[in-house]
Image (cartoon, rainbow, N blue to C red; front, side, top):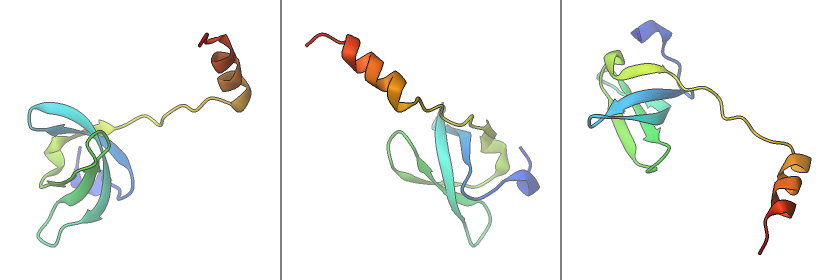
Length: 77
């Protein structure tokens, strides 16, 4: 990933302490890099270089209300 291709508010796959995580970039840092929120843990992290950004995370696919209702109806309680 290159610095000029990075957009604030977008979710990226980022290498965080030797694992890959989904991080939403929230703002730029004064001295370079960005702040982001890890979507799994909710913690704020600083991404110093664009090299830690792997790619844009694909958008989550939602399901319609009707499909969700059918799934819930099939579950036996």
